[in-house]
Image (cartoon, rainbow, N blue to C red):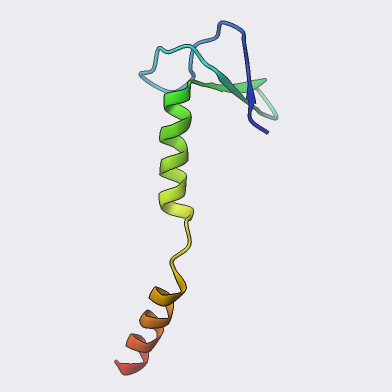
Length: 69
């Protein structure tokens, strides 16, 4: 899905003028979304903060606390 590129393309993220090292293929208007290594790391960290599941202990504790109330 994400591939490394060797062409001289700038990063597509706003306010970033670095050279893109990764390309994400898109359907539709654009051929690909070009990202530099820093923006890929920032995007991954942001996605992981939203998508990482809670530990089972926290879910069990939350369920028990909701039953007490």
